[in-house]
Image (cartoon, rainbow, N blue to C red; front, side, top):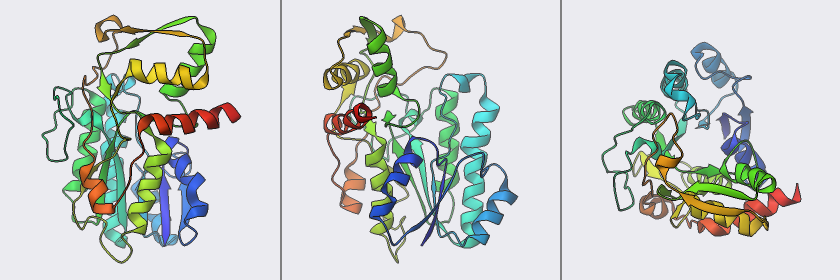
Amino acid sequence: MNILVTGANGQLGSEIKSLVNDFSDLKFFFKGSSDLDICNFLQLEKFVVENKIKVIINCAAYTAVDKAEGENVIAQKVNEEGVLNLVKVSKTVNAKLIHISTDYVFNGEAFIPYKETDDVSPIGVYGKTKRLGELAVLNSEIDGIVIRTSWLYSPYGNNFVKTMLRLGEDRDELGVIFDQVGTPTYARDLALTCLTVLSKSKGQKISGKGKLYHFSNEGVASWYDFAKAIMVMANVNCNVKPIETKDYPTPAKRPHFSVLNKTKIKTDFEIEIPYWKDSLGECIFKLKKK
């Protein structure tokens, strides 16, 4: 089975690349935006047809949450138009599509974990454009699913874990927001889930039981809890103090609560999801070895 991974140089794409040896029956084509522009349909179609692609895992996205407030045209081009192109080409060659989305499609006003059936109401450009990308897949007739995730980190790229480690080494004290709650997600766990979904769906539709799923690690944390755990596990001597959202204003408003209910993906694909602190420890161990 030939698989195209778009956005291959990002966190999730890099983690999928690190797992390919465990899925020797699959042939992967990893493409970053400079190699393959999902917003260029003719280029995309040519590559997919010539390489007989049967599955696309879309890790490509405009993810700069704050910059998106001033770059809404670019964000929409990548997060909606690019996905529409992937849907169109998937229909042309009868390929499966796994599209990654975000907890930012919710407004954060809930108090129990969000289910796939809950209403969405994104509060910023990033969330709104990602929702449009979701709809491109959900409203299509292709064999495709959307997996929403949250607070992604890994040893690759830029993320909260690497930022905290860098700042923690340079400063004696850091203020981190405690009134935004969600679940940190190790990109490797999400990558493994994407490949498990494909592995368990051979000869069947990946969208056979539903087109929309939630995935994050297990458990709940604030950004403050997350930062404290990072410092302890990495043995960094930096005092992390809790602050409120109002004390750290940003161009884009963040959801105050974005915990995801993962029951559906665990049931449909028989997946066991690790606790967030266990996965964080694994990631930090890898970072310390670098």
